[in-house]
Image (cartoon, rainbow, N blue to C red; front, side, top):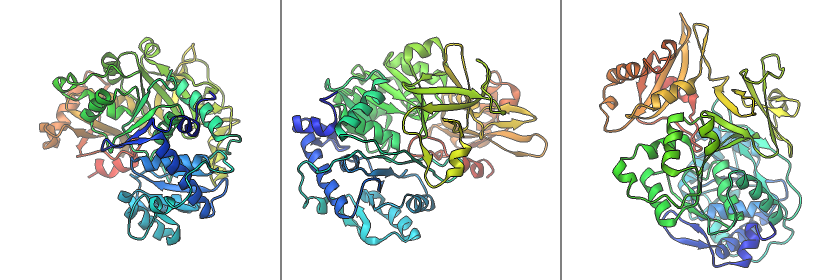
Length: 514
């Protein structure tokens, strides 16, 4: 482990490639290290001290990764803001996080400026990764700072805000680690990537398919740098471009969400056959339920290199390899190293193996709290275990199976309907690209099941909603119990997904009721 840690690796081999930008240009480890060191000094000039926050609304660019590395060796909490949030939501995070500075990629300066104005954040502490009106240019100003090794280095961390699918985003705060940043992040990389059987060095390349504005995506990218892997950035997800980059760059690892896997599988066979994906050693997916049919097809295509994880910003969860999953379809695995999982009933008592209840997770180190909200922190816990509201069961070997979120369960005529099951069935239809299932109030049934669907642009269902509803209801008739089949189907151009791929279900209600 002593040779790992980005700063150590960059000093040893400054000419090695660290980042491939979306336009194909390459950034060396030495250049990225110099930029991170200079940024760290500029941040300290703004008054940054250990434990302070730096908010970033950043695009997929190497300068974003340099900024995270600057925070990680300065004792700062880096707060990535989901670029799909509204101005009001961003303003809430600014007010809650109380950052020393806010930083945006040029593409998001307008968004950040509006939020900063809403909460009165000082103009002189607004920076952009380039030239932008009303912002100081972080790249130009930091270029005037020394770029040699930083003095008094101390580990920083992420301060992630939960996606806010059921309310305002909440900051998940943990105490900072102590020690040398290289050692701290090398050990973290060994834990995080090691659980997926990813090995350090060995000419690894990690493909970033999602926005770096999400904590998990940014975290895996920077952790790959600490592991000695190069990071290949995509500006935005494009299914065929993913395959082209895997082939051309000989990608070894990537992280995707189930929606992206589904879109890869929707590519025509002749397109898929053009590209060699044999370099892939670890395809990791998470951040939402993956339909069994989708998972099986991805394993058939890429081989047994597919890994799945379940967890939350608040706590580590479970992990499962492809061979394990093929033996236990539908499972999200057993506890990650150092984690524990238990199932509790409505009375707060642990349930026997096989019985369904609320999922609670525990990670032995650095317990979290919701920043500035002790009531929410207490409400989510039972002892040292925490829940985010998911429902599931454990089998006799400790493998976890999820049912869905308790807040999303539709109770129709007194019967529970789990949206994830209905969504998986709808998603198996060849003309459906994405779907969200929710419950809406019904005077007779209490709630009725409805679906909001995104279909292929060339599908006839895209222009005939009545036909879409009839076709899908008929399709589901022999796949789901009658009470689970959506009463209505609304077709939309695109579903409202956050940067991490999670569906923002509260935004589906007006779509379904239009």
